[in-house]
Every structure is written in structure tokens, then in C-alpha cells.
Length: 103
Image (cartoon, rainbow, N blue to C red; front, side, top):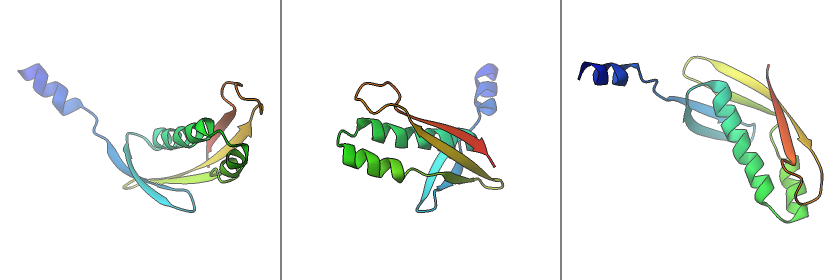
């Protein structure tokens, strides 16, 4: 009983964050600023990979955020994202890669 209580007390709870991309503000939950940013960017990348129309892919690639701001309750962190398009054929693996750097 005591160990169960200790496990519940030591759990890290998710915190509330707001992702600002310049065009929109998205409320999310997570543990750390950078992890929240990476999760959001991976979702954007997945939407590109699942799109089949080349015109729509080009449009979505141009609209990818180059900088995002993650607002926590007390700390605000800004990340610069560099997107790179690798290959243009259909089965290139991860065709859209990104690097994230804290500003």
C-alpha cells in the first residue's frame, strides 16, 4: 500500500503548453518544451508523407513553420526549425527531415 502511494506521488504530471506558429495558437499537454515541439513537428511531417498530390505537397512544404514558440506557465522557449526535402520519388524513406534548435 505504501509503495503504491509513493509511485502515485512521484509520477510526473503533464503540463499545459501553447504552441504558437505565427498563424495559430494550439493548446497541448506535455512534459517538456522541446518534446512538445517535436511531437507537433512530427505530426506536420506525417501529414506531408501521407499526401499523394505533388502540388499539395509543395504547398504544405512551403507552409511548414520555420520558427515556433512554446509557452508554458512560467517559461517561454523559441525554437528555430530547418526543414529539408530529401528525394522526390515516392519511396525515399523519410523525405522531409527537420532540425530543431533552441534560440
